[in-house]
Amino acid sequence: PRLDKIFKERSLPELTFFDEELEKSYNNFRDLMEVIYLQRPDNEQSTDDQDTDLEPEDHNVGLFKGSFKIYPITEEQQQIEEPVLMFSNLPSNASQDVMVRIYVIAAVNLTPLDYGGTVDPFLWCHIGKHKFDESANYQTKKINPEFGKMFEARCSLPRDSQCVIKVYDHDLIGANDLIGVTTIDLEDRYLSWKRANCGLSKQFIVDKDDKDVWRDHLKPIAILKRVCVLKGWAQPVFKGKGSTLRCYVNNAEYKLKYFESVKKERDGKLGSDEHRLALYVLHELGAVPEHFEARTLYNDDCPGIPQGKLHLWVDIFPYDRNLPPPIDIRPRQTEAFVLRLIVWNTHDVILADENIMGEKMSDIFVKIYMEGLERYAQETDVHFRSLTGEGNFNWRMCYDFDYLKPEQKVVSFQRKNFFSLDKEEEKLEPVLHVQVYDYDTFSSNDLIGWCELSLVNLPPPTKTSKECKLDIFDTPTKDRISIFDKKKIRGFWPVFDDSMGEQELTGKVDLEIEILTGADAEEKPAGQGRNSPNQYPTLEGPNRPMTSFNFLFNPLKIFKILIWDKMKWKILTGFIILLVIVLLGLFIYTSPQAINNAIYSAMGR
Image 1 (cartoon, one colour):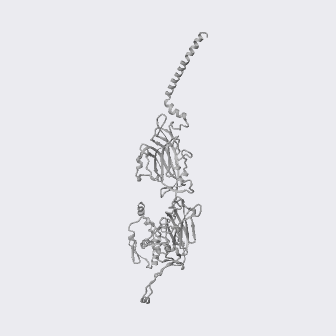
Image 2 (cartoon, one colour; image 1 turned 45 degrees about the vertical axis):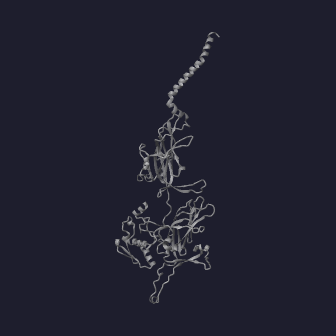
Image 3 (cartoon, one colour; image 1 turned 180 degrees about the vertical axis):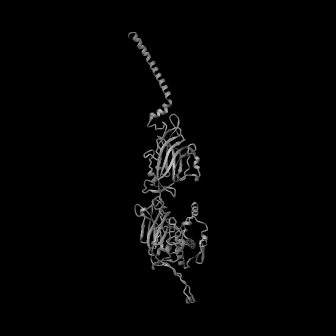
């Protein structure tokens, strides 16, 4: 609905989608001639049940295109005049050089032929003497591939009237498997008065810089005159100007004001009033609009069972110097971006552990990764023994990714498993996963809190830690931010724990998010963490308290900080008391022997 509103407000021309072969919607383009299938004279068609199930094409050896008309004429009419012939105005039956362009947009619901319910499709096209093999450009494991391929060939009608398009499944070992095939009769489209050789746009736009510029080699008035000739009508007549402009075709009146009652935004790019009215008349007469069609693929191994559909359209132009340029329908190309994050600090992180003195503490670090790319996750260093829930990091993280702007998707090519030979394309949401952990040396790390930040729908952060609450995730969509527009932002975002069913605020992260194009990132290089090149901006080492270190590498330091600094006087007093007790014990223990020795010495022994 939103796109429909935009198209109407901006008066953008729309493409008509036919959910079947185009010819089925237009009586197989039999307005000039019928198709009669030719069969061998000696082909005896049995009436058995087995033969009646066969399609007529199974007996065909060719076809004849033409028409037969029988005129009832009385003797009086024959003496007066000959009747008006139905075939008085026909296209030339001489061979015609044409340029054929087949635009294959995509395939949908292809029948899986590989193990796991997938297929590796590619296109094969045959137009006259020209063959196009796209086996080198096969797509990996896609039942709805986007081809965006245009096949162009110079042909001669009626000799090269058939276009055959096949979809194959690519196999590394053995022959490729045919998924399905569809055949297009180019001659029927080219000769039909309904202008099936090039669908008519809803607007006659003449501005060459406009992407919807008129692309037919004939202008609307010339097309309308050709239609009148083929149908045996008088040439169209235009009368009046501006809002009073009228066109008379086959005794019918068409007024411009009936079709353009509202002023359009693109009026400055449109052609003359006469051409616009002629275009409206053509659409009223039933000419083929600008479109794309869905052609069903069939396989002789599964007769009558659809094997998927191809979305495409066909353009056929006389081969001359006035050929319109082809349309670029290649799939949308991704753009290279670099996401740079700087984790400055954390605040009010829940203290999950206790030290040997019974004090609450946490060994805090932050882990961040993009949606679907957890194996490329990056982590800060650890702020050991935070006693206040504050962690200091000054740590940079850089993520390279390919982004599809029109779809707002991150495009990743990954192997799904160890045995996969090809990487598969995957479109992911541009979402950051921010996680705060408590580091444990001898067990798995404990997740304290987390949050998800969409890069295209980002809730605005708060400037201070005090203002940071969970309600920022309830920010209305209209007040949210796209980092691709904002480019750079810094602030506090909350992390929470919802393992108990309700969201509980468990910390706040001071985070800076910056997005750069691949070219900008090369001009402003920056290293991971605080590594070289440490610039844009230069990150200094975090200002952490002395208690923040790994006790496994500094056992004496942990003793000094956690025990000595807090209990040194008690330790000294205890040591002195212990020393006095030891000395007194030694004195008491050695005194009898010393006294005895002294007495014996005095007695002269």
